[in-house]
Image (cartoon, rainbow, N blue to C red; front, side):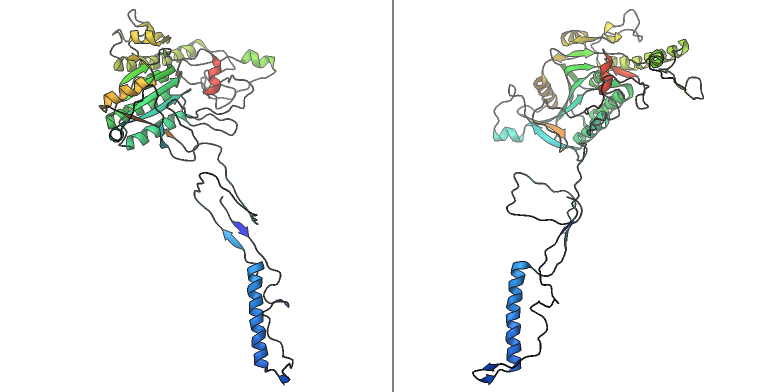
Length: 426
């Protein structure tokens, strides 16, 4: 609670009232004691003693005069377990409570998570002290350098969250290796490139082994990130690849006519609105966009070839006769990816952890940790960070161009259907 809380307690006879027991001693009236007149001083003293006793009784029962009690509570207050309150509590004044709708209220902390039971062994006290400490960094969903907003739950920016996690692990000397757990079709070209470069910087500065583990899918920009790891492990049912570039452009002029919508753009510069959804795409505009897509594709291919020595050496152009077919943007299952040299082995998450442990030279037991905020759960190595927000859209499809935040962007992303845009392409 932040802000003043005012509590008042009032007695019915404040000081200075006519009924208050400490009012000034009035003029004494003569009294007799055993037939003699009682001295005035004695009578006044006795009255004061009685008044004092009465005052103490009043204070004990009803309190003294009204005095406001203002309490300020600032900062953080943690309450663990059950809180029980017996009796009545009255508060008079303003109580201000601030509830955050996002999960960015705290810094990342290392949370121990359960290691797969099939791979865990009995641990002795001696081995616990020398066990390897391996961090799991999750890369999930569509990768764009921006958060997605929903019903009171704006999600994290995946690029910023990835950078924050690597910075925390870089500062933690107790971490022996990391496993990048990937389950993503890719995302924006620039976002993927930033994340890949950040992972390369982590490796060069820490010299700690990094193993990528592909879950359901590791395609497009997600695979682009995986190529910066020391080793890549794919689940037997993983989809791998998507080495290509896509720019989604929509033509909506006819649809606008059906709804009576007329676009009246005001512009200076012939191509400032290219590609525009309200007019046909000119041939020279298409050629320019395709040229940019080819250049970004070449960058992707060069990164894959530089980090995957098992890939067949061929000409620089993906359209060359001897270029591997894997460069045409397709995705393949893990066995085909292993045969093509896109991954190093087929296994599960615990196999990736053991491989990272082996590369770190720390045999024995393993402690797994994940980086989480206070409001995020993490109990097992399969938990994910909340990366997408609840959507307010009635339709799952989001068409770029209908709102300013939905601008087309080049994507390193395997995108078989447009509904993927609703989860990431803003």
